[in-house]
Image (tube, rainbow, N blue to C red):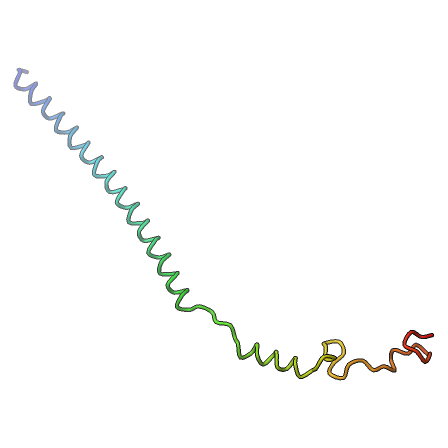
Length: 103
């Protein structure tokens, strides 16, 4: 094996290493591009979800609230859930006596 054969062998090893290194660099660049692409897709999906939520915003049912308030107002001051619209019958407060305190 002469000097030229050794030079060819060294050149082959250098070429192989350069090819390997270029492959590693390309792999790293591809991984970085993939991560960036995934981050962009996640960001886009989040923005789309926000836009959908804006478009489908829930609105209060003001008609039902006003109807409920009007029905409650018809009961008057004495109209509660416990007493109804007629209030409390004073005769039920007498505890067998003529006064409200039972005395």
